[in-house]
Length: 250
Ligand SMILES: Nc1ncnc2c1ncn2[C@@H]1O[C@H](COP(=O)(O)OP(=O)(O)OP(=O)(O)O)[C@@H](O)[C@H]1O
Ligand SMILES: [Mg+2]
Image (cartoon, rainbow, N blue to C red; front, side, top):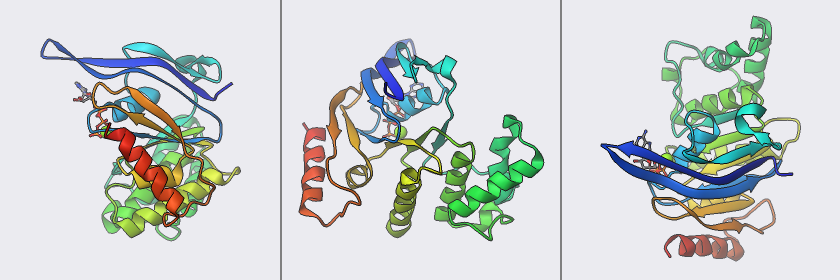
């Protein structure tokens, strides 16, 4: 049984009395320990799909099944990392992470312990008491990642998480996310990454869902068969990237 099963999902919005279809008939599965990416033109519904998965919005049609149960009954732990993390400027790094643990019934002492653990996991030891304005863009994104990991997510949803970072910082964070994903003693088990960067999708994922322009539909659920760790300079790597680009521009 797959961990997550998305079946014939569609989403439309009513805008000025007209219906705008964001995406249509999306079906895919995600297994435990699997990493999938979603690529597709701007406006094809990628962010909307993630918002529906995390429960911020409802689909218009279709179902989402988690471990055999409807998503809303299963109540899995999902968390999300955005393009830029919305940190509270008046809270320290540690408080920005602790705040997501507040509704979960931990004691203050446990919250501190968990927050410090994940601040360390993302490489921000020593910055527990810093304020967001004292951090670089990459460091802020690390805080966003620590906050997403602190709830011990079964699935981590990432919406263009590296796109606002300079390329060296983005490369370093991609490697760290891959290491976390591969480490069975740390969350997350499974990842869904939305990206416009095809190199990134090929570097990181087991499968790439390639979507059409709006209304988004899956053109191809493409398996990336390259062994890991992947090397961007490998000719096979280029072939994969070229292939995905060619499908996207069909
Ligand atoms: N709250 C909303 N009300 C009306 N229309 C919306 C709303 N949210 C999204 N849409 C529409 O749904 C479509 C998909 O939007 P979405 O943000 O999911 O695209 P995307 O694939 O993430 O694009 P990008 O790559 O630019 O981030 C767009 O046409 C957008 O205008
Ligand atoms: Mg988007």
